[in-house]
Amino acid sequence: MVKTLLLRAAALAVLVSVTGPLFAGDADLDRERKVRVALALAGPSKSKPSAAPAPKEKSPKTGCGCATAPGGVGTCGSYPCPANGGRGPCPCENKSPTSDLGKVRDAVVRVSCGNGSGSGTVVWSEGGRSAVLTAAHVLGTGTDPRVRGNGRWHKAEVLGRDDAADLAVLLVAVELPAVRVAEADPRAGDDVLMVGVTSLWSKGRIVGLDTFNGHECFLFGCDTGADDYSDSGDSGAGVFVRGELVAVHCGKVTLTNFERTPYAASARPIRTLLARVLRRDGSKVIPVATAPISPAPIPTAPTSAAPTYYYPSFGGCSNGSCPAPTIRRGFFR
Image (cartoon, rainbow, N blue to C red; front, side, top):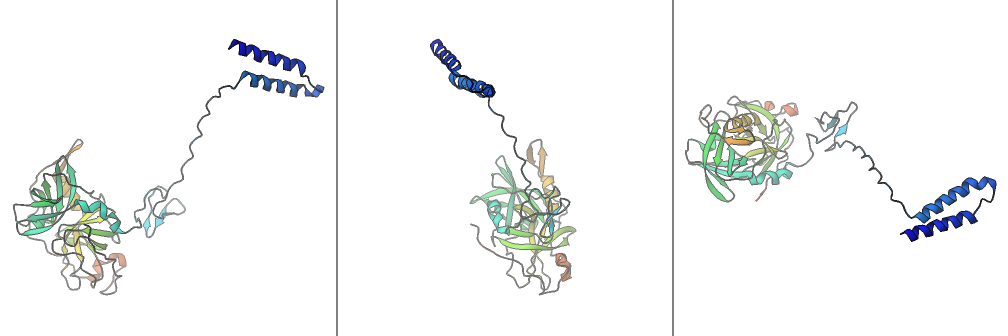
């Protein structure tokens, strides 16, 4: 090591002694050249790590074709974009309702009680237990409810029911795939997907609101000549918007020219009933059996007879003049 340093120093001394400036004005250039040679003889120096460049600010994403308008508020079709300058997903995401089929199909179960049979949807699952949401009239006055999920029948108990809204919640001692219940009600014009155990799945559109035993319900479908949306055994089936449960199928309108239009209990009474029977204790949810609300006979169809009432989103329309719905049915398993 010492020998190497001595050799480098000697070479530098020789270089300095034999090299001189050619002109008086070259003194600075000569001095700079000597410094470079000295550094080269001394070997490479370790450079300090350079600071990482500051991350570039990401441009806001607009999602689902959201067009941001002046003032930061955009539109997506006829719907407003999120209020934060068009960032995030748009509420009118342009995709087929059936694209959510994979999210919900495993949570669909068959419900049986006495002579009644229908569909249900698992809305909570934890700790080896599951809560199934269905229509109250599927249970009727029976006392032996059962749920078929994962290819097997399971005994169930009634956690709670609201006969006025035609809703019931069952508890089974098995952990089944569950879906999320929407926090907000859908709007007229939203595309929906109904998944039951009989018709398997149907696609339609919410075309209006009505009242049913004092509760708000949705009607979906428009063209009375279309294929039936639901079959016997679909009562209690979940109705979904973007993969979240927004309603429970209760029946079909039986008025003239509307016998093929299904209706469903809205998300509001669903959330109310679930809040009663699924109590939160810290980070856990505890199922609690409750007494039935408003015991009543099997509900009847909505009583409104004005066709235009069913289609407020279209500004009112008479029979045969409504846009044909996009209905498609098929198997999911």
